[in-house]
Image (cartoon, rainbow, N blue to C red):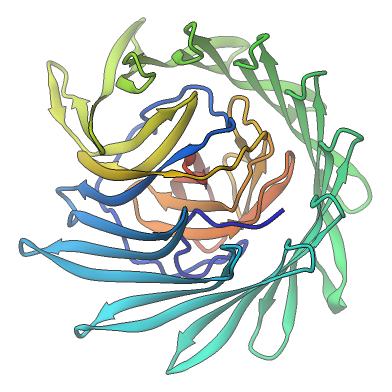
Length: 479
């Protein structure tokens, strides 16, 4: 397996790495996050992929932004970000990737525009083993004119390319300090059935922290995911998630339960419906209270003949009726996608900044080309013949997050194998980026741990992006 990166790397990119990311979006977003198109996400064998060349996002409470990409085949070589200042596009950040002949990223440099010149900010260095699998990532930050170590990630693979373990280390100024240690166990079909998480203890030791135990049906669809925490002597139940599927691998229902008073207690559930082409047409979200299910949100989607989303309507349950909440509309021209976002003011739709996902349907694969909090966005794109057949599938929601709400640690878990380099971004409700990291291909059941102890309490969005596919979730940090 060659590790190819088709995701841009911005700044410090290691598990749990908190970076001083400049705000890319900033606006008073309130309410519930939704994506523009929530249909089943799958990776099918395709020959053509779509690549965003220029992305323009329009904002009112923060300067609009333009992002310009240059590629080597489908791998990003440079990513230049500009913001609108006094009516002029002005340089903001520049990411430059150095690639090896296999298009694996060897070095990634982030620079910021200061005093009319590019100034080094952070860099990441990647090493690979003899089989071409990612083995280490070293992150350094520029401080007072010198590069200083920050974080390191160490991977061990088996002969098939499965990740057996991953260590996260942090540099304290004099030595490497243990952070997190992930150990993965697979069944005979190659599915992860246990993920053990250990944290750095005293004297350089590793101690148990949590584990996830997964089960699957005969088709490899996720059935259950049990999350447990270590109490010092034994494992305590924490969270149980359950999925059901139809014969076409569409996720029909999702149930979330928390362990309370030595029993599983319902928390929330989703029920999805699909059309004959596999497009999700409705998503009903319920919450559990006083031993009763209550309506929460209803999402409705429409599509054109090519399977591209035309409209997305989100309604909330209020006083016994569904009430309009948000609406998005999309149009498709040759090499251009345009999106508009609206809020309901009580009597009519008005332009409003909201989280938007612009994507194209490619042979059943929704390929996301842009996500962000905007009132409008344009994506100018091109196509690339990759000649790669990837048989990995994402059936339904590709990842889960727990606990939610979270305090000091938030875990992101892959519900299905996510091929290719994967990026994870955490943004606040204004769209400000607060955490970002990348990971080699996420195996089914593999987890990413994010340290949230140093960010303010509140609601956040988590974005997982693999290649041209993106999925978002909303989480809450409490104190």
